Length: 207
Image (tube, rainbow, N blue to C red; front, side, top):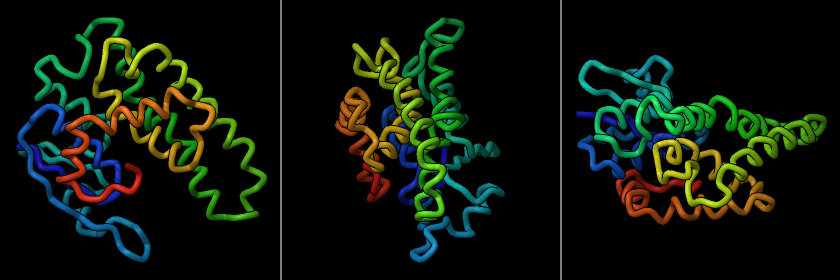
């Protein structure tokens, strides 16, 4: 059975959500951030050497990267759900979104988070960071035009994986020019499985 090593207020919330969407059997092992540093506790290193979340274990299999976890869970428990058929053009688009979420789109948002903490010292970087954020959000905004989810075929694991980008952008007040993304995030948060994941995983400040 899959064990989700779940850190509060972290990307592991979307893995819990995915498990709920699929009705897959799982257990949760809870971890709490340090109240002062906001860092993950050292106990997470027992699950994976990086000591970060999300991590899943499934027997002797250990997976730590969100995109790899989403891919694994859907292949094992999807039974044809939440991903287009392998070998199709739609599947290739699905894979692009699955990996671009953390590989590209989250980078300028994370840099923005760290630079904000520098105050005036980070001001010279602001325009470049904002430009990169707008570039990636614009790409997502265009992809959502005319349909409810990131792929025209409907809701998939790519929406789950990419959701964190929309949530963080919204938390930073970046969605004023991106109404498709704002509506998409709101739509995702209305899904019953998302609400169930909050009940089971605890408070999630980006929700």
